[in-house]
Length: 283
Image (cartoon, rainbow, N blue to C red):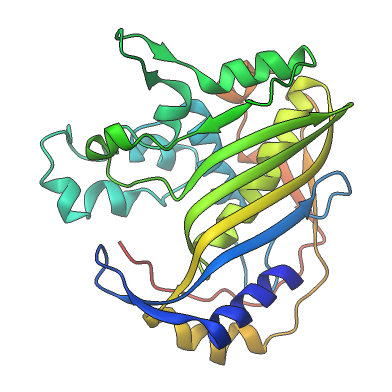
């Protein structure tokens, strides 16, 4: 929470205005931010100065890990964050690659589970990582990336959180996650718990202790229509102590994640928070 607040205050005090061509809305922007989450000590990075909907964030992560490419599939597991980009993004609506309502194209999890190879076959990046780590193998390339410039035109949105690198030291697994762009009032409150859960889950199913997440953000910003809510409301609130996350210990394999795992398998305790803030979402 202190890291999140420090980043928000840094953007407000040091940020420069940048016009975002995609949304048409200016952003107060800083370059380079580093956050760290201690998963091994169960310091769950859930923002407390406003209510955050962690189950929707975890549901979105599950959709990525399953390779979903349709907003309806995300809705079915409790996440509505892809509705707008799938159905209200005019550039995507005009794209001949779009197959119809709720189609997202080849974004995020599609790349992670079905990366297209030149011979027409696909590469399952996540399965390779899980298989290696389960055997205690770290080839310094246990990398899950959603960033495929050759297929940007086939999806509704380039990935913001684009790459995750897993590192095994002894019996402890660490994660370094990279973002090219971060909407701090909205997106980051999803991204922080998602990174945490990703490391916790992969450590659990591969039989390792969870260490730390190192979250690197290139472009961190607050949209102009979000700024007053941040400065006049959220930053005036005193944060509460971080809550704890409990993950169902029966989750033991990638197959479990792909089939029966749901938001109900993740429970947060001691989550004390201020009221929700309705930040506008830029499409």
